[in-house]
Amino acid sequence: MEVIKILREVSNKIYENVKDLAGTEHAAGDFGRGAGGDISRNIDIIAEKTVLDYLKEINFECVVLGEECGRVELSNNPKGYIIMDAIDGSANAVRGVPFFCSSLAFATENKLSSITDGVITNLANGEMYWASKNKGSFFNDVQIKVHNKDPIYKIVGINTSGATTNLMKRLHPIFENHNHTRHFGANALEMALFARGLMDVFIDLRDKIRIQDIAAGYLIVKEAGGLLLDSDLNPLDADLSYETRVSFIAAANQKILDEIMSQINQ
Ligand code: IPD
Ligand code: CA
Image (tube, rainbow, N blue to C red; front, side):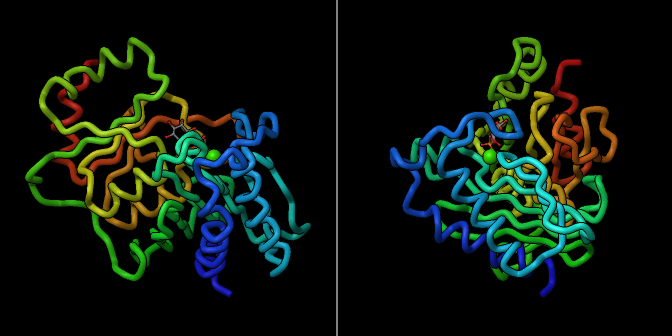
């Protein structure tokens, strides 16, 4: 089976297994700290187990890099890496805020830039965003592109969760300049909305985001024609290690990137 089909199939299984759990006490059960450093909740564990069980069932030879389970070698002869954030937006999922997703990507090497396939599934409703390298990005069965026109309302997504005072001071002009700023609480799904053209820019300059949270979004944004840059405005890339934390800016085109960058205090 093609890798993208495997990722789509197992994403549907995650949706089936967690769709009635969000906001329940059962979802919140505490399993201690996972490999990514946050508390693993029952809903995270159920979603990850869905993926691990399925990959074992179909004998998919890979190394899984999961946010909770850490590195799991499913073969001595792996074809590559599955980068798994089985629940992105765990706080929303546990509280029942309907904005959380799964993020699954496949990479042939230990680098973001070697990702060949990515799937983000909105677990509040089962909608799916997916991409394979050089084949475009899709929302369910429809090809998507970033919003490349002058927007009627400029929507600027900014992750401000846990941002330092210094970062908030740098970003302040963006808030002040009457951009329509948004922050929903699940980076992967926000990248997917950006790729679909529902936001014009998405910024996370906190130096906190893990590879698992952005791996699928990385490919979906690029295949939808978005610019994806690091904080020095170089093309975003990073290794897949658990220590890696990144900052990034996704912009629909150079004009809107320049406009937003001119509003960020250095
Ligand atoms: C979190 C979400 C959130 C971001 C956090 C991430 P998680 O992922 O992506 O938007 O602000 O930094 O940790 O922990 O829910 O998988
Ligand atoms: Ca997670």
